Length: 287
Ligand code: C5P
Image (cartoon, rainbow, N blue to C red; front, side, top):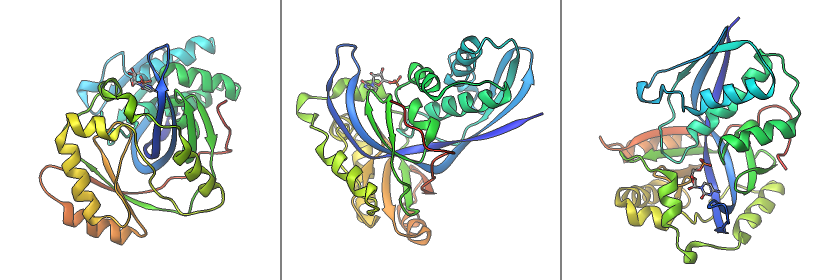
C-alpha cells in the first residue's frame, strides 16, 4: 500500500521579532498562511527508513524528512520502516518553509501508515524538536505563531486569496538573517496581534510588518529589487516571506495574479501564482 501527501509552502502575512532569548533563538509573533505551492511525498512500507528525493543535493540523512521519520519511529517504538520519496517543487532556502512542511507531512503520514496513536501535544513537541516552523505545518491554514514558533493558535480561514510569489536567484540561510537583526528591528507584536484580531472578525487579509526585511535587504540587494518591482504590480503592499528572499504580492483574483506574473517575467525570477490553502483536518492548537 502506498500513501501520498502534499506538503504546502507557507508565507508570513506578518512577522515581528520581539527579542533574543537565552537559547540563541528569537521570540516572535507571526501570522502564517499555507499556499498552494507544494512538495509531493510518497510513503511505502519497508523494513528500514529509506529516502530518495528529486533533488540529489537534498538526498542526505540529515534531511528533515529522515529526521522526522526516525524520531517518530523511536518515540512510537515502531519496528517497521518506510521508503519515502520527496518530489521537490518548493524552492529551497527561500523563506517558504519547504523543509519544515516536508517534516510535518512526514510526521502526519507516518502516524497513519504505522497506525500510531499519538496525542496532539506529543506531535507538537516532536515537531518543535525538528524546527521552529514545523508545529505550524501540522495544521496548516492560517494561524498565529508565537514563542520560537512552537505556540500555534489556529485562525479562521479567510476567503480564498491569490498570491504571486517571486523568488530571486539566491538562497538565503535563515540563521544568517536572524544573526543580522539589530535591536532596532525588534517590535512589540502589536501590529501582528491587530491583524490576528481582524482575521478573527472575518476581515480581509493584509500584510503586516516583517522584522527580517531590513536585515535581508541590506545583505541581499536582489531581494530589495524584487520587492520594489512587486510593489509596482501588486494590488496591496508587497511582503517578504519569512527570512526571504521570496517576495509576495496579494491579488483579489487568479487572473490579476497571472497578469502581474507576466509583467514581472524575466530570466531571473522564479514565479508562482498560488492560492491560500485551508487547515488540514480539525483545528488543534500547539500550546
Ligand atoms: O528552527 P530552525 O532550525 O528552522 O531555525 C533556523 C535558524 O533560524 C536558527 O538556527 C536560528 O538561528 C534562527 N531562528 C531564530 N529564532 C526563531 C527561529 C529561527 O533565531 N524563532
